[in-house]
Amino acid sequence: MKNIGILTSGGDAPGMNAVIRASVRAALYKGIKVYGIRRGYEGLIDGDVIEMNASSVGDIIQRGGTILGTSRSERFMTEEGFQKALNVLEVFDIDQLVVLGGDGTMKGALKLSEHGIAVACLPLTIDNDMGYTDYTIGFFTAVDTVTEAISRIRDTTESHGRANIVEVMGRNCGDIALYAGLAAGAESIIVPEHPFDMDSIAKKAIEGKNRGKRHHIIILAEGAGDAEDIKTHFEELTGIVTRVTVLGYIQRGGSPSVVDRILGSNMGVAAVEALSAGKKAVAIGYNDGKFNEMPLVEAVNVKKVYRDNLEDILTITSI
Ligand code: F6P
Image (spheres, rainbow, N blue to C red):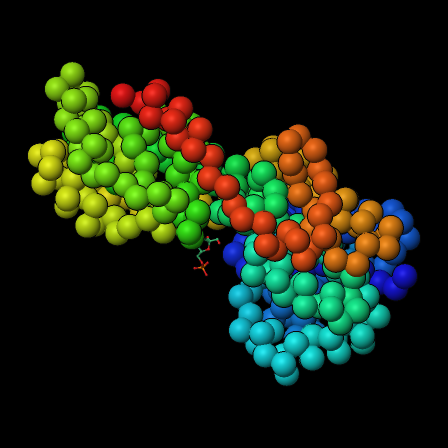
């Protein structure tokens, strides 16, 4: 067994530093030299590699973002870039990688595994759009952030008797909207997983208004439609003054929640354990209350299942 490398790739997610800290210290605990690869696959191609020690990851478990930096790398998709990446790994005698990122990152890691690099992948993204694990790391912190933002938006919406279309991230997955909608008590959510019926959303708001309700919060997952178009249509149907709030990149930042720190610490250690046990290409997940390993080639193809039952609960409890 040679040296271990660790890299973070794709959109950053709260909890990345908890994972980096756990993986680095687990490797050192086993007497394995560990290198941090900066800026994801871009930094790998550039040879932007630093040796890590216990102090390298001191006082970071509570920090958002990633101390290693990240990137979205077009170059890694080219033969030339990929070959450069393999050459850098050879120069540093790295034959095992802990890879943190979303589905695109994992597909890149799978390609490295086909060229002799053992990889252990961890699901780091706020989107919760990876079907092989119940939760991705970063997701619950993002839901906390959105839930807090919605409670602030409700204050001003209530004061003015308005509605607010709150657009959240998630790419083509509606889980941030779904979980934050449930947690924040939003009146309606609009998600890409199924078509939405603006007439019934409007009817619910009018009924609420007629009962004296003075706020109407509709959470829009970014992949499900255009916030301004939905705002205009909703106003036309209800006569309720409506504003739009696009939460944007605050959903990616912030100190990771306790849940994401615990998920991240467990998975960071599990990744090093898997590599030390000789695994070649695995994804570490969290399912039904347990941490588990899955062959990477299977994990990247598991379809995400939308939790309709949670949306039913939201519908029942928000009138
Ligand atoms: O995948 C995480 C994510 O935040 C998505 O929810 C969002 O659509 C995307 O990244 C934004 O990408 P970028 O950071 O490249 O603008």
